[in-house]
Image (cartoon, rainbow, N blue to C red; front, side, top):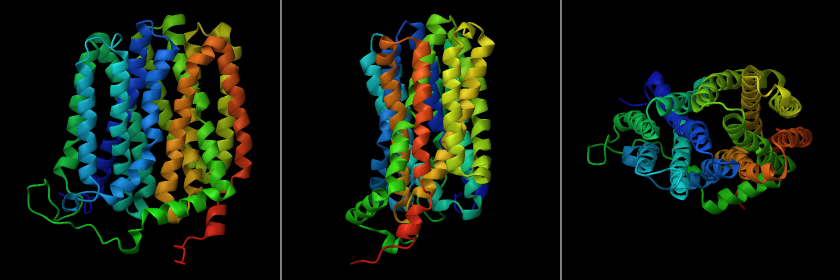
Length: 431
């Protein structure tokens, strides 16, 4: 069977691979964070582990030229990279199982989380490249919505389901089950060809069936020259600035909340993972789908501005409502509202950055924006500990709320049509 001739199988494979991306993210940021907090780790430790998740994704733009330049075409343009990344993702989690005590071996744990997410970012870029290669124009919208939703489902498995296993059994059991799921998902790219006639495995018969690339085989110098030209425009540059700062508050919030709920408000690990890996994730999934619909109706830039301001207001409101933090229903409502707003904001930013990206280097430029979004959240996670040393939890939320509202000042200066209007859609003529 091959992915080119079977739209349903193609969509199922892409969604399954996105589940495998979301699952380790949910495991580290929800289950593992709750476990560490329950062992009396502070914001510094949890923020550092969270930073190890974000940093490799901030550098994922480096994978694009490598994946495009190197490969084993008889097995497909993207499939060998996906198989390699999936296998290494499973291997790194399997290695974590061998750490005798995760609290005592925190340095080793951070290194393994970092390495795991390097392979996760490689898988993400490879899967996105496969989607670009194989998806028909009329199915891209639906496919993107389902793929992004699948990553939320993966977060649910890694957060709520792995958290339940942690509570009932132990952390190693949760890790073993996660490795097993990753290996099962790897069967999709292992047993399916990209195109008919290609090799299933390196030693089987077959040949490259990928279309010839012609002029699209550009030199690295050309690509980076065009990329510099795209970023030299006001909108291209300011979109990068926006991506770098818009998720700082998110990184601070998700780190501080773990310690607040478990150590100060007395939530159990089970309660934390059930809420953050369950209700909150499903509401985020709904928010992402609604965000895609709204972005088409009201415009991506306007929706991003609305979501940014509302997120800031939510954080400020939470900081002023400290007397109600002991009420679990109030906190759950806040977490749900926060996740919905962040999902809507993320989807609107995706659409905005796609509009700003120049078609000649769209993949590289868009990936750069995605990397900056991940770096932005990583900066927030790194800042969580120092901020908590300087101020109370309430003041932290007030400050990130003010920062989030201030970020909206960048949006009016970003014109999604400027890049194509100034640079055009066609490939520049060679001098």
